Length: 412
Ligand code: PLP
Image 1 (tube, rainbow, N blue to C red):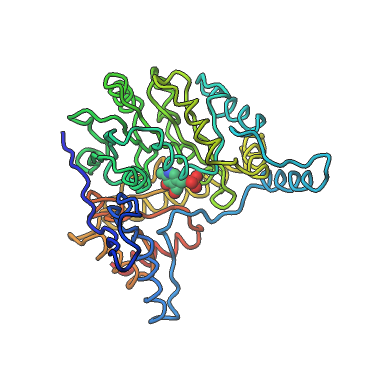
Image 2 (cartoon, rainbow, N blue to C red):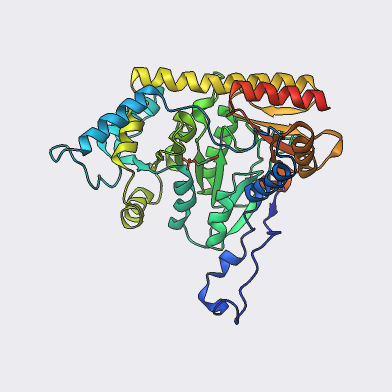
């Protein structure tokens, strides 16, 4: 069982006494953070290349943002809710702290009860997205808790915990272990799991997830389960929620997002499930934390999210997911045909592609940009175990995806 402890490589320069008013003002944990340079560095490299080659038609298969418009049912709900705000009789100001009942009831009915999962509305907290909640929930934990994350990983989990100065244990996810993290050899207090995974695009089976639930219940540990991409699962039997596993409501908090499910990256809405059965009253504590520091998701966003559960809304968002997953399929087939080692992309909008000929992930990024005019995300930006891979996303248009694949093939 392999693991290692985090040592940031690119820490932010420490303030000098003279220069920045004295280091004693600052939370020193922030100075230990690795500089968040991945997307900045990508933007810088792309910007420089464009300046030097103004005619280059660059296609981005890098960043994890969506491209397709919101579903008509969502747009209709937004218009209707906007009109309600235009008259005093139907105006809404501050909403209920945990979110409006209409949305929490729809979440419970469609995302849980429809799958045979027993979650109550008072266990659901509506939020402005999964980034805030996956980043903020750790505030409820002691600074002494040891936190495990996969490597590669969505960086928010690490950085949020480093801000509190917690020890981080990394669980390697490699081609050799099928990107399935092994249970830690030592006790950890919290484990972040994200499935379908960003960045590898891989999933856990029910059995694999069960071994984590059993571990957490045995070790009295918590699992923070990020289900931001569950709507992309196509295969039967892949768990959509950790609560499909018996005993999970005694150890797991689950984060959801409408960002990728329904194109809400700009609208902003998500939710977090904090079961009453957890051994510590985290439900009450999270309510306390949220009602102190968060004033709710907008009424418009919550009505928009509610519309994703109507029959039309469901069909429309499924059609958009099918559009992206057709890209993913095409990318998998084409890249595999070109001789690349390709992982993910079956139940997730991400493909994790091995770099050819021993190139580093940044070298391959440069080659893709300069030769094929395609932008990818270097795997090394997601952790040491991301070296040797790049992440491609299926969130482009069909046309751009086809064009990008053609160009990569013709430049090999
Ligand atoms: N969790 C994971 C794994 C993500 O990849 C992302 C966004 O890329 C988020 C959470 C954040 O989602 P949201 O837009 O809901 O904040």
